Image (cartoon, rainbow, N blue to C red):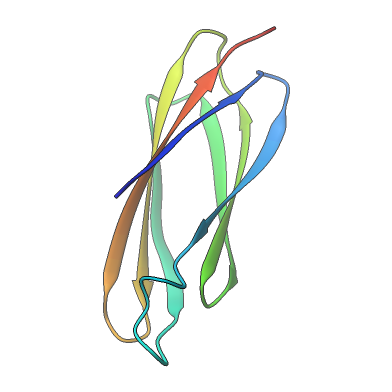
Length: 93
């Protein structure tokens, strides 16, 4: 699912969260971050499973004038797999 866009400057380190509470069945929870892919390379994204319904992405670096697609794939304890996309536009102001 496409989640949206966000801007950042090259020297910033930002935190973005993906919340799955509305998508989860009763009693289910996110059990693992399966992958986090950035295209093109150059933006650093570190995913962290905060709890059973939220993943935090720590986003840093990136080249001025570049746009990056971040694709995150998670799996729930019940076996569902969710894939989400965000776009980060890096601009030095």
